[in-house]
Length: 151
Image 1 (cartoon, one colour):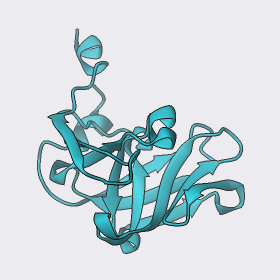
Image 2 (spheres, rainbow, N blue to C red):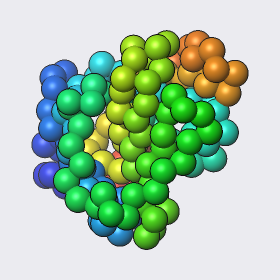
Image 3 (cartoon, rainbow, N blue to C red):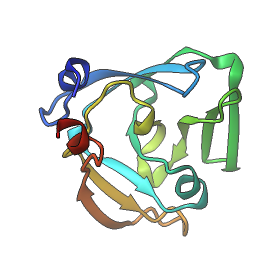
């Protein structure tokens, strides 16, 4: 594991600024959050098919640093928008207003973080497919690649 990754290990609670980007780096962002407070995976079709793993933050904790001109917007319903890079196709973040999730929000795709070790971070599975947003499971994240890199 690189030093950059170990500096961002999330086993220590606390809000930090994380940086992330799409695959081609055209879209870049910063977000302030504490991953040990919990992350989510939803079973709606867009989240399932894009392998979305998110953390919900207040809009004031999210900053788009670059790439507004290449952002696409996909929305099945007015309450939420999936934002993706039109160059490489990666779904980077989302935003919307869902009362069951606390109102106005931004959601960061944790798979787009740069150099962040998220081993041990709690993951809650939500039922977005049926618009209930009920918890349907929970676990902690285990990075399948970290063991291979330490061996």
